[in-house]
Every structure is written in C-alpha cells, then in structure tokens.
Image 1 (cartoon, rainbow, N blue to C red):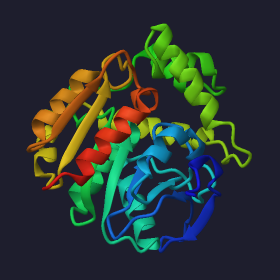
Image 2: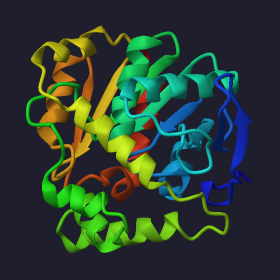
Image 3: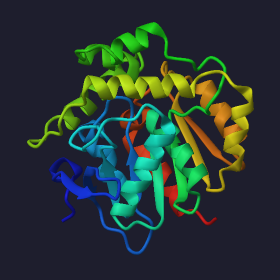
Image 4: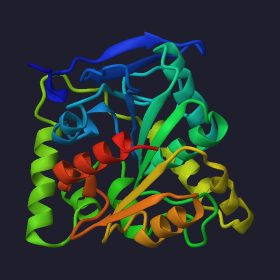
Length: 283
C-alpha cells in the first residue's frame, strides 16, 4: 500500500549551494517525470493538503520541499523570485532530477514561471495555480485586508480561511476540513520565520511592480502550461490568470467555481484529475 503524504517523513538532502533542503517524497513513478510542488507565501511542507498530494501521487512520484530558509531547510530566504527559482533548481540537482513536472501555487507559481524560463530543459510541463505574470498592472501588493490576514505576526486560522475559501457554507466547510487534514500529522515541519515572511512579501511586491514590458517574458515559455484559479480568489484575482494564460503560447486555463485562493484544496479530487489529464495528454 502506498504511503500517504500525511505519513511521509521529512527527509533532508545537501545541495551544491551548501543548503540542506527538507522535503517529503510520496508516490512511485514508472520512468515518468516526478511532480515537484512549489509552496505559497509563508507555507511549509505541512501546508500541502494530504488529500490533494495523495491524489496527485496515484500514478507518479510527488516531491514537496521547503525552499531556502523555509521550515527545516537551511539558509536565509531570498527576497527575489529569481533567486528562489535558482534555489529550487539546485534542489532538483541535489535529487538527481534531470526533468520534472512542476506545480507552483501562488508565490510558487511565480517561481515556476521563472524556472520554466531560465531552465527550460528542466520543466517538462507546468501547472500554475493562482498565478499572475510579472509586471501585471494592479498586482503591486495584495489588498490590505488580505495581507493583514495572511501576513500578521500571529496567524489567525479564521482570517486565513477568509482568504483561501469563498463565503458559501460549502466552501468554508471544505476549507475547515482541509486545514484539519494538513495539521493532523504527528511530525510537523518547523514554522516559517518572520524573516521568511518579510523576504517572500518583498519578492511578491517586486514581482507586482507594474511594467508592461515584462509581460512578454512568459511568451518564451516552451513547456505546456495549465493555468488554474478559483473564481473568487482575492489574493491573485482570476483576471490575472486569464491574462497569463493568454500570454503563454497554447496555455490551458480552468477557473474553479465557488472557491478562492485554496481552490485546489477545496476541489482536490477534481483538480488532481485535471492535473493528471494535463500531465499525461499527448504533446
């Protein structure tokens, strides 16, 4: 029987940059590219919903990791998306992964775009969840109530639910269940630090500085791309996902109903099935 993400131990691997990276590894691949997960703002290994990861790992190897300075990984969190991407590439090299599929969520979707641009041979296919292109107008920082909810020194789960899930009872209930699944394990990851919070939000702010000329960067992404979002996401508004999908050649787009930033956890079965179909479709 396959090991669930909820039971997967945290393992570490030394990388060429001197950083010891923490990761969890589930599923079994049969010669295909493993799926590497890139986490959202302030999240560590525990913030991936086990129900989603287990569904993704039905037919493939799935690797979640703490990037530099996050959770149990060493070093200080960098304050640029470009450096986060380079660090993620270093992690794949430490694990001897010549080619991977990538699922980047929120901040992780920015990093995924950068990896696809600077190391195109590494990225076979790319899933961008709650994503926006660099330089999009109106992306220079999140709405004040959003950053107050997710960026406070002490996290209030109820306020996080307001950002990650829609107002309907169904969405809210799904969010509560997802949070219960995330933090029910015995071995929890090390919480992210205030240094990580500050550096990551600096990177988010810099990514969102309006610059129309930067929008053209993603037209150079060669890998097939699947752009996804919730229809009520207040953090990365759905219009930015539409914009991104329109800029990337032949990108696919899906917006999930009655959901917000955490749509991939709320709709975990449907989302995992959509990702599986995308990753296995003929190119």
